[in-house]
Image (cartoon, rainbow, N blue to C red; front, side, top):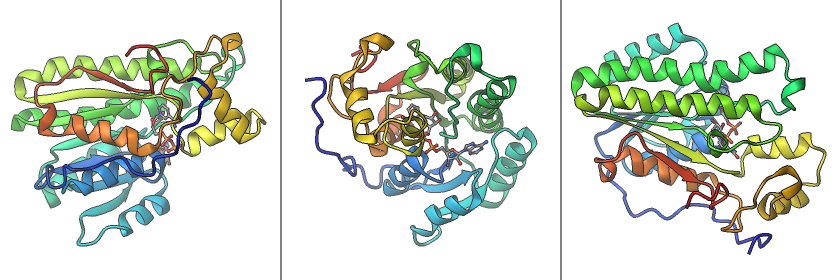
Length: 278
Ligand SMILES: NC(=O)c1ccc[n+]([C@@H]2O[C@H](COP(=O)([O-])OP(=O)(O)OC[C@H]3O[C@@H](n4cnc5c(N)ncnc54)[C@H](O)[C@@H]3O)[C@@H](O)[C@H]2O)c1
């Protein structure tokens, strides 16, 4: 089974069109990859989406694919707490309350722990952990005052299993996953749900960048991720494929929706079984 490459799925199955009609969602890191797929999944279910990214051009291009102002784009650096608060305040004043917030923005600096620079460590936590804190604090304050809301944080399966060469990234994601749970505990009584989606290897620029950095042939690297590498203490992917961004977005859309109305403080691993959690 491991090593077998299944056909790529370009879009995950839908069938829930309209289930988010009337909802308004904020998505960070929406300019490409998983964030872009989350915008498609939420807008495809009828939500209005505020798509944000550090890279203003890419997120403008994402929004331009949708008609009728369903998706609007704004530049946002999640490391800037004041900018996050101002954007949430201005958005809610102009366009109404946010019902859903999805933290997707993230960066990966891979290196052995003993070679990581202070800047690698700080930059990783600034985006992956502090950024999630900034967004959650701004939206959860308002959602809990209104008595409803759903927050989904995209962490990583590296939050739950040690990975060589990924210590800063894995630590930042473990911190963000636990932060999301603690927040969820605090705001549950106010009707706000907080969940985490933990993707495994997913075919995006982040994954391709990691393969390119290692100097490996892309197809060989892809097969090696699927097959696993016991020398690196890494099991393969039991389902035999690298995730498509739409696979992750489907899980996010489910947790954001009322179908998950009794689910909070949950970590949903979407990694083809790679961390053997079932
Ligand atoms: N691709 C994978 O294999 C994988 C696996 C597990 C988890 N993840 C996580 O999923 C999320 C999305 O990953 P991806 O593969 O789509 O990555 P990606 O690099 O393709 O896209 C990340 C996006 O985040 C944006 N971003 C970076 N810094 C930002 C900042 N300071 N403020 C706002 N936006 C910022 C980038 O501009 C980019 O558009 C990340 O949090 C990542 O850690 C990815």
